[in-house]
Length: 297
Image (cartoon, rainbow, N blue to C red; front, side, top):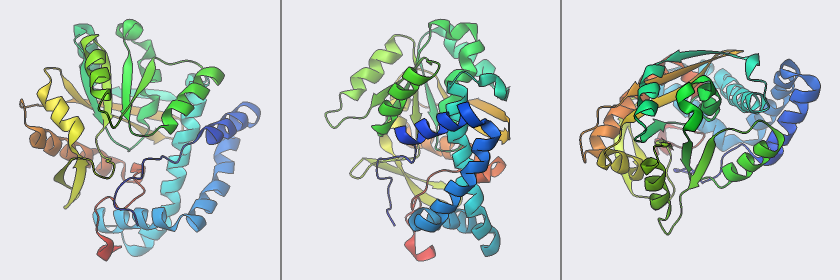
């Protein structure tokens, strides 16, 4: 099993085309129903991902072997729901869901200051629908969210969604080998924009930090934490979690950042992420050997 993320997410343009087709012509409930067939496929033909889910549930969350096996299916299903929900919300059907805001005042204050800010999230829940949460805020009218990503598929998905659905203010900054993305990040922050990092994935040969998550050391990318700890901008931990079938819950917590202390920021991040995963254990969507422990698979 790969011990690092391989740079490509499960979501593809073709997948979103299919989701939007079913949503438009069959409805959300029918799309959820058809999702069960897709999940069966992944349970059978994605053994590496299934082993990663099993390890996470059994070894890191402490589920029994039986409960862990049964919840492999549930984990895939939750992930599929988040993709369908994103397509639904971005199609202009935002009113199909209800939303709860926990800590939204932290984001409002950051936007009012117009000095820029860094949002640190993870591959847990459905952060990619967050721009549609913010649409009702007056402070967002002149603001922009930039998502820093290693995944080139995001740009293709974004382009397709913009052509087929309701446009959002989000844009993507792709991490490049020549490090030019650093200038894009600084430029976005200098214009008062919000820059979002997912702080739980790294590519091979990336510079890394280690910290304990759910009782075991894991590797994290150095870049987001070094940058966030060096720049004089506020840092928030932000997650958007699926609460029920038609309800999402946004969490925004202010991070205490010591200048230049990337390790300290990572430690605070992992504690906050543990808190989220305790509440929503089946919304952890890192389907690879995150803790690099093949002996316990």
